[in-house]
Image 1: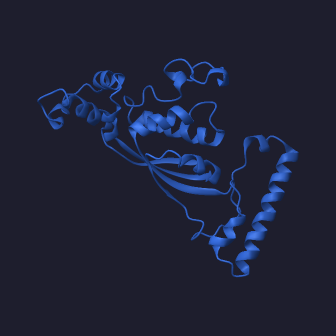
Image 2: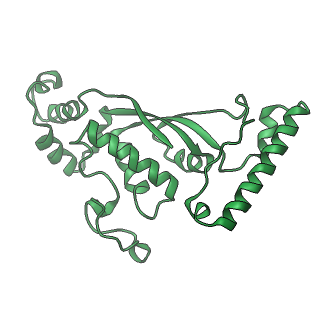
Image 3: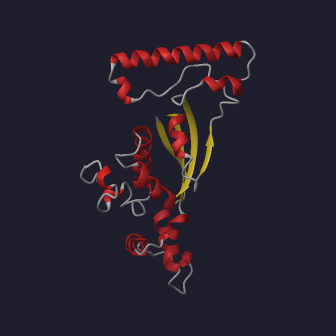
Length: 218
């Protein structure tokens, strides 16, 4: 899995803080931007629940080498934009798939997994050789088949995404991706994302009896 930030709002912390302060000032945001205290302003405004101000910050990630199982979960976050590698137009002739850690940890399971993947890709290649178009041959391909995807979210949606997908109860692959995205966001906009992550970063776990029982992660 490779996660890269390929575009983002420059000076996002200050821009969002200036936008928030402009709601309570006779001065426009471009004037407030010159001397705004991003940490103080955003802590106050976002702390009051006014999360719309951080929608002015937008982040675009390029992610490669993740499974279709991951992207099926990812696109449920609807306040975002996605562009995913097409299996209609891109031939999957070379075997490429994600192997779960639980499978990697068992020799017997690994053999079953790899043997099955070999059969799938051999069948896929045979269909293509028979003239079956890739868009139809792909019906054989598994959820573990790798894909590349471009993700654009504003900061408000990212906070929601991190709250759900950085949790220990999230599925392991999308959690690994979310953790990497959060690391990048913290480097880029430390004020906006200083309390980002699973709910246990900010207070008690809301999962009740389903809680993992771990202490706060950060």
